[in-house]
Image (cartoon, rainbow, N blue to C red; front, side):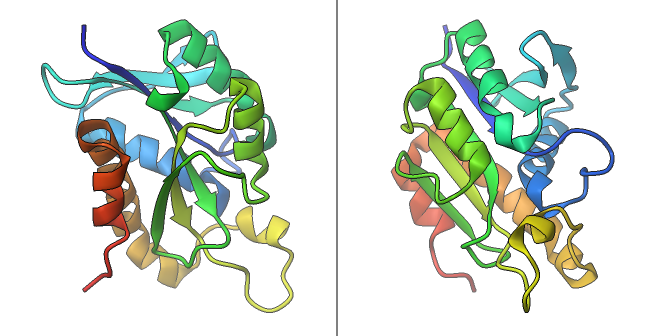
Amino acid sequence: MADTWLIVGLGNPGPRYETTRHNVGQMVMDELASRRQAAFKQHKANARVAETWLRPGAAKLVLAKPNSFMNVSGGPVAGLARFYGTDPDHVIVVHDELDIPFDTLKLKTGGGHGGHNGVRDVAKALSTPDFHRVRVGIGRPPGRQDPADWVLDPFSASDRQTLPILISDAADAVERIVEHGITAAQQVAHAPKG
């Protein structure tokens, strides 16, 4: 049987949050599903799920968008991991990252949560931090804006020009982790641009 990978885009539910910085992980799930004409359906683990394949005959991809709020993402992720029999080394969490400049990706496996409450909750629910992360840089807020407000704002008009490329790059990184492993994916994602 083909490997099954659980790929989770963190975010907040509902139209109010759809276009916010905090939901960039879910935007990446939409891109991965769109590439495969896969549709999201409600799952009993409190998430919307699209089951698809990397490509015919290759790894199975379970693309997931939790219905819970960001800070309590762990329950749906752990529920899906149990349902699909997916170990943490086959879980990829895609999320926004304040400490990485906008339009930059960083990939890692394990380690701390860097103050990201969604990642913290997933690590707690899986009983390990040893899952893969695709960290999508959203940058820090300008001036004195509270980071909590910043992540819940939509992307700026200038950022929206570049956002589709960033989302596409993040989707490519997910596919590369599944097909070639984290190290190979890091070498591409972390290479200087231009």
